[in-house]
Image (cartoon, rainbow, N blue to C red; front, side, top):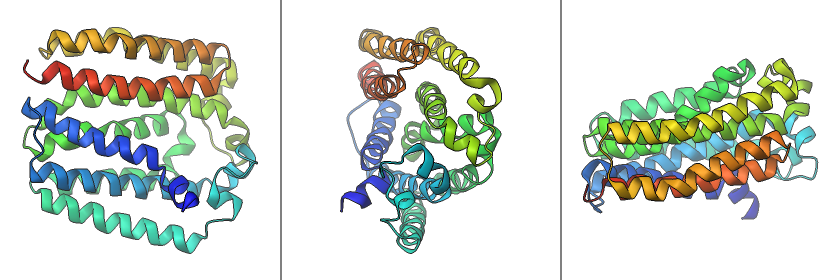
Length: 275
C-alpha cells in the first residue's frame, strides 16, 4: 500500500481535491458543495493519478540517478509497469466519467488536461521552461476546474494564475534538484541549459515576482480584506523559498512552496466568502 500511495502522490491528490472544492466555493462565494463540484473533485483526483503515475513511468531512468535510495517505486523496480498502466487507464476512465457527471464543459477541460499531461513527460519536459509552464498550468487548474463545475469559470481565473505561479516556482526547484538525471537522459531543462547558477536566478525572480502579482490580481478582482491578511504568510513562504534556492537549500525551498499553496488556498477562499 505504501508504494501505491507514493506512486500516485497521495498528498498531492488531497491538495487537488481541496483545490477543486475551493474553486467551487470561490466561484459561489459560499461554503457549498453542489453535486457537480463533488464529481469534479473526483475527476480532478483521477486526473492527478494519471499525471503522477505516467510521469513516474516516463522518468524511471532519470529517477534511478536522482533518487538512488529507491524513493520512486517504479524506478526502483518495486512497482511493475503493468500495475502502473492499470492505474493510468483507471484514472483516465474515472476522470472522464466524473467530468461527464459534472456536466457542462468539464469533459472538454479534462480531455485537454489529459493531453497536456500525457505529452509532458515524453516531449514537453525536454523543452525546459515550456515544460515547466505546462506543469504549472495543469497543477494550478483544480481551482478553475471547480469554478467551471458551477458554471462560473471566470471566477477561477485569478486563483488559477496564482496557484500556477507557485507551482512554476516549485517545478524550477525540482529541475535544479534533478539536474544530474535530466542531463543524463538528454533533457534540456533550465539547469542543463543555463547552468545551476542561471537556473537559480530564474527561480529566485519567479518567487519574488509572485508577491506583487498576488496583491494586484486579487485587488483588481475585488477580493476582500481577509485575503490580503491571510496571504501575507503565503507570500513570505514564497520569498523564503526563493532565498532557499539562492542558498542551494532545495528541499527547504520545495517544502516552503508547498506550504504556501495551502495557505494561499485558504486566503483565496476567505477573500471570496462573504466578500
